[in-house]
Length: 218
Image (cartoon, rainbow, N blue to C red; front, side, top):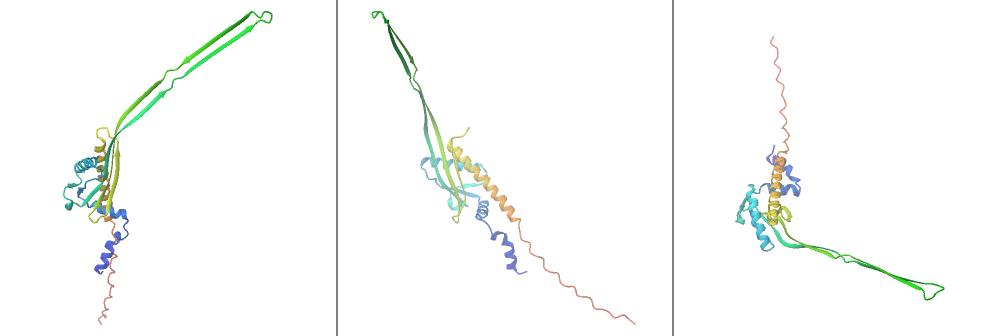
């Protein structure tokens, strides 16, 4: 079989690759990553440092400070805000008064008269409360860019802080775990794809030529 036919049959499974398959194939080959400076000021710089530590501790990638040596560059933006939530509740003062009066006179004796007055007052107390809660929120969105400029992975994470991690540290930890999970999934996907090959059809066997007949001896 001609060599170019074998080549076509070998690469046939990759001819109909989807963008997701192509991105997975590129991601599976990433070994060395450079983390670029994230936009967002000082807070973004802190998230970048935490992200470098989290990815390095994953033992899946080599984190380099030289962009030229990297297989891919991690770019993006991050922010870290501290704000105060205020909760206020109040019960209003209420008051109610009731005043009544009456009089009566005898018909026969105009001088005989009587009058009465009554009054009542109820009061309610004003109560108010004000609560302030200080909160810390961090968010980052990143993308992994291959050397040819293609974006092969992206993710976003946000956090108000975890039990044992601050907000920024928790965001970096989430992004690192997401990248490691997707990286392992990409490698498994590519490994399964590589097992699918078009087996060339076997060449036909040569036709059998009947042996010549030998005349019987007399």
